[in-house]
Image (cartoon, rainbow, N blue to C red; front, top):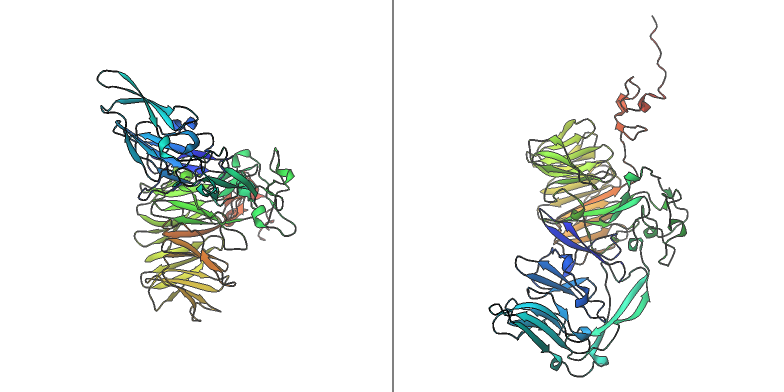
Length: 594
């Protein structure tokens, strides 16, 4: 299948992990392993890949290897890399016999080979030697039989041994109609690849018959593809599940709003614009040599969720006007960043920076590149951290239960509140809510004095959304209480309660929450609800982000050279911007009368 790629990414300390892409590197996905008890990640040694070990009519099969200390651990896929099975450990490569019906490997005890005729579900030992020789070669004897040629060398006498293994007796007659089963070829997210789906027909693993089909793709179906099937448009580059501006180009056009109504999936910031009902890019994107000023989007921002596990982080982009996510499999984000996701971490998406605590220093890492900078010493442990792009400030909670704001423009550190046990921050709304150890829920604008109310039940997390007049309280019993208010929080009874909730995030009337490690959603107005990601990743935390990606926001004065300074230093006679733009167009000052 065109567009399939494998690549090794950094994983934790001095480790690598192999990820898979089906759209030429636009998005990268973890691979699914069918063997019970096997836990990813896996690191394929790609140099060991041998396409000659696969037969011609087995285009959906592939074999890769993980290098262990003194042996190889083979992995086999029968669906073009979507799911994988492990094979017995070996010191040599695997081969498929004619028509792909038998897979052979040399056992660690080289007196034996292991073979499977049911797509690597079961493996049978077969004794061929007695003195544990060194295996030099194993391959198909002919292209028309179920025979393998094995060349070995006796360790004591150096005698060269030739052995032909014939497994044709394992199979009966040619396969009939009832010996095949049909299925659709999956990709990383669904079954549609560049506007086409593939209907396959392969031998049922339990059927002991000869598969004589020359081509297992029996039908190519038309389907509706998405912009994710292509790369980001010129001027943008992929980062996990989104497209971010390519700052090195030195030219950025802000997209204009599209006229008329159309699917937002075809008009996302940085994504290829597709024609209606076809998998063809709109003409003016083809072969462009600059960022197209005609670029239009339904909205000039991107909504997505960050999802956390105990040692991983994922991104899932949200469809506009709906609660659904675009990709049903979350995109791992930690392979793209240099900071450890096991430490508190914050993202400046407009500025393309990551912040993390490293050896008591808040450290800054760019999305792309290898540089890093220790920008602030902090003699305390950070438990949780977020970033406010408009204020250009980090907000974090320390081990001493202090909720602090650190300005990256001035290095000024402000204590928002003491005795804080949890907080939630919505940077797109400039709102913050936090809970104290005395069961006080405080809320308000980030730059204003918060209002606090004491609750009559134990609260572990809270968020008050003024725009929607809703308050969310997560109790110690994992019950999420949702309250609609008119004037003040607490003046109305609970309107909804959800049980077994470990964390939540909201925007507008869309609620996302975690229950038993699964990502769920609920819409207040329509009542729609359900599970968004079927496979359980054991998520334990989530964050909602709404990001304007074309340029950083500035809460003060935005200089012409893109520097952001405080408003109260404008027109003071000092060039804080560096280009004097803060000292131009100043109101005339009258002199004092004597």
